[in-house]
Image (cartoon, rainbow, N blue to C red; front, side, top):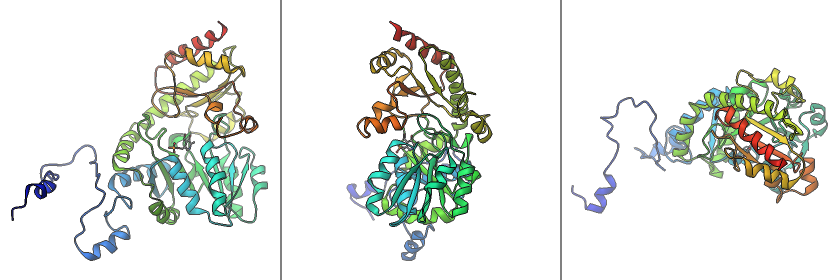
Length: 394
Ligand SMILES: Cc1ncc(COP(=O)(O)O)c(C=O)c1O
């Protein structure tokens, strides 16, 4: 039957299935929904039997999830629209009114805000503890504690959590351990192999790697992911198919990027430690770092100690500004984990969210500068930093 032009055009341009054979890269499936054959298919689809609606499942998210489950040695992965979406979905799915969570004091600032602004409204109690001291974590446990939440390398002072010591306490007391492993990446450390129940990442950082996607992921046992999934679906925080495809593409070069970036970070940390303008350098690769030995035991140091480092200049806002203005290659950017080296001034980033005393307690001194090291030639990066430090004397 002949249809009119405006009807017919909607059925043109479908994939020429007969022509495409074994493409080297996966296809992108942007469809928001899939055609079902029978009424019963809907019931089957709803149970995860086939694709039928993008928010419930999508092939690009599933392909990415399979790759991340493999890297993190977990059974299943949920792909979320941002790191914060991953974090909020996990907390709101696994905790309920009357529960208590012990969180590390040294975690991402917006995770702290989420815990302070949103969880109490749902009747969830939150305490903060120093996760670099397992006894402090043990002391924070209450009868209703259901979860420990920590990062491995803390931002921005790069303190390292001894995860096995923390998960030993968690196991003893029947508490779940959730780890945000964004800074570590699965090449350096895989929390599920060290007693954690769930690992999550902001994929906006090293998974994406090129500062062009925003995403998050959550990996755990099938049992735990199946508990989270119904809320993930209802909260509606799935990542779009194109970003999922782009992230899978980036995952394929992630080991090379992470290795090069982490190696550069070690060289930069050493160079900065020798400059008289620098009062302290915070990177676990340095023998003088308080957790160097712990990190050397925990990490696959073939990949290094992470590509995030901080250093402290004089606590003089004007002088820090002079240093920043003189950097030619390294630019000021509000993210991290990209292929190019960038910096932030952590105190300024959180000045609107926390009081001066809170910022001091968090170790965010005026003179503190954080660098996310990229994959440029380390000699160019070191020369740029040293000339900007020298400019502070003028
Ligand atoms: C350690 C860590 N976790 C989570 C997040 C949040 O990720 P997103 O910005 O993708 O929501 C960030 C962002 O910087 C982060 O550094």
